[in-house]
Length: 201
Ligand SMILES: [Fe+2]
Ligand SMILES: [Fe+2]
Image 1 (cartoon, rainbow, N blue to C red):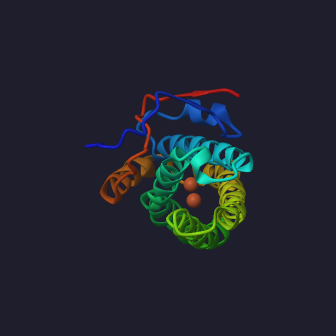
Image 2 (cartoon, protein in one colour):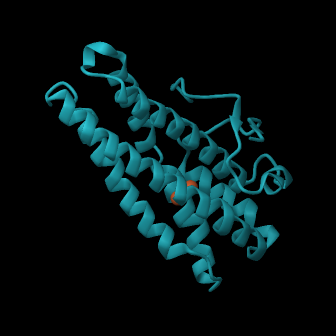
């Protein structure tokens, strides 16, 4: 049961191919991954807005709530492990076995690099009360900018190359078994409901 209040009913679509998303049955694992990407993009745009708010602040007293907001966002970005495991174990491993060219190794490496960037951001965010604000501001802005650009690039690669390649090469009768494997791995607290709409932007 989902106990986190991070669900949204409508999400801006960041997928390069909304038609692909709309063509998938609601239970399709790729549909879930694309919806999760849209949710992650929404966290990232909130994080970019935090970065802008910090710009105009001279001390934490100007907006003490920003500490809570940053912790909420970084905690959610760190809760995407099961998303990555589904991509690697269910999708990429299959494409590797089929010897289909897909950017599988790049994606695995990016998962590792992004995990480090998210942990760095987390460590910093939790030091907000123990660092000089000017130092914190400078370091956190840089860490946010690295995490946001890295994740955006990563998601774009998966949406525009990995998912269409998988759809093209993996036989249709395989996807029901893949969905079962995904169910066994599990989902994230922010995994959107399968009926969530993507709005064109
Ligand atoms: Fe990924
Ligand atoms: Fe992904």
